Length: 97
Image (cartoon, rainbow, N blue to C red; front, side, top):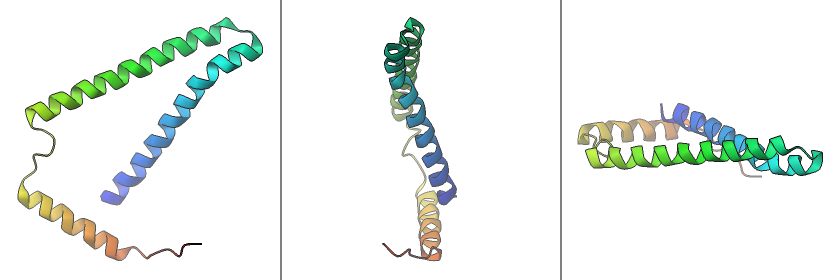
């Protein structure tokens, strides 16, 4: 389960930076092609991205306040740790080049 989450989180990070790269590129493309529409799209997408981060930040604070984050039972933590260590032992170490 931990490995699957790790792979999914890498995909989401790559997708996020890809979208941020396109948003940051839009004003440059607007300068190159002399299109004012790219500047408008850049401003709208930047506002949407900032609003999304603000909502995520607020929801995280609310979850901390309600005790939904870092409030696992001790038994669940021990079970997850044992599974994580077992998965680490199964993985073969890779040679560094």
